[in-house]
Image (cartoon, rainbow, N blue to C red; front, side, top):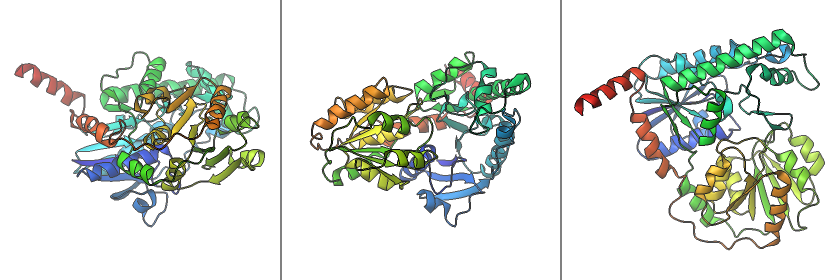
Length: 430
């Protein structure tokens, strides 16, 4: 099968979780004998973008989306025209490059892109976060998960985008324009999901969209968790040195909602003397956290490439994923489980669904709140690391398990017209 992957997160010097998923999926499909290319941004100069992101196939620069602000921060509102405008730009690039491919698989942040691709295109999109109904993609405000559903209430987030301080007063005009933007965004997302095939990376993510848009038609959607390249992770686990007692690894973007600040504040002075925390990653909160917490028990390594991050996790006593936001399907958790390491996280978002992938009882420990997570970590560190056991030959979130489900989705009829014809043909055949 000829497959065109599409993402506005690629290429890049520091690729986040969504981009890593695209590259992992594309490389594994190549290994399975499929012809795969990636279509991404043309405004991120690189002499060899495929090599930069670790992709073994061809990368096509296709669209530019630089300067995407549209003065939303200055005005303190969400612009109803902005996101459809960029979605159309990506759709035009898809249409220009889709010839010769059996399927186009979009992994991005603009669900309405599906509305603007040409009719008859075999188009699939994967929703990786709560950006199907939330314009910040995170549903997190004032240090807590956002439970607001009324579109006008989203003015609280749009005003905060102006930077530190109270920001512009919402006022009736800003509130009305933001409500219009949110309503339009959610309506377009729902229409896109009804028209084209959609993957949600957790059932949690699917339920959250239906909570915001109860009458959405999600009959064309499926839930498929993020996949990992288990053979590579298993080989890394077998080659890793024995876990070091007290070594704890945290990896990810050090930003709002990711829980690094909350975890480090809660853990200060509460862990055994032999505990050593290694924080891997970069982000806007890193410098402040490093000034506040770096010392004999806490080191910040900054951004590391994927292989280096995995190597650190493979020899850790425990891994911690401290996100206080609702992670849709944490690849970091899946990688820790595949490496055979114990992992601690909050029981939020799609993370509880990942307990089905544990290799032994208690491998994924979930806590209801950060103080209890820290207390449990302290208890686990008081005991020696679990003795090394041979990783099993199979892992539930391995590409070998999940790719057949995805390929079956690729092979389904492309759009509503094709689906109706397919159903009629089946009816006549019956």
